[in-house]
Length: 155
Image (cartoon, rainbow, N blue to C red; front, side):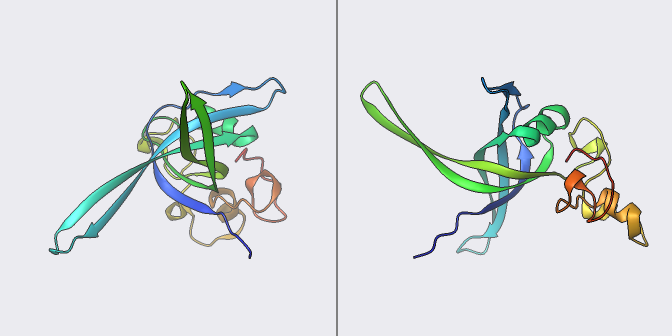
C-alpha cells in the first residue's frame, strides 16, 4: 500500500528562531508555529482553537528563518510529519513534529517580521511579468524567481 506524508501549515511564529549549526556545518533551527482554526460547534456558536506545532528547518531554510523570522511572523510551512521517540528515566516519550522542507514568508514589515518585501500574493503588481515573478514567492526555480529568471532572492 502506498503512503503519503505531507503537511501544509499557515500560522504565526511563537518564538524567535535560534539558529545553530551541527558538526557537519549544516544549519538547523526549531520554530514554534501557532495555527488558528475557527469553526462552529454543535450549538452553532463560533469557537476558536489554536494548535501549536514544532517545526524543524534545515540548511538554507534554517538560515533564512534565523535572519528574517521573528516571534509573530506569519509563515507558510510545507513538510512532513516525523515522530521522535526517546527514553528518559525509564519512561518512553514521543513527540510528533514537522520537518519543514519549504518555508514561505507571508508578511511585510508591519507583520512581525524583520523586514524585506511583502511575500503574500496580494503584493503582486498589476500586469504580472518579471515584477510579479520577483514578488510572488515562486519557489520552483533556483533562486526563488520564476522559471528562467535570474532573481537572487535567498528564499
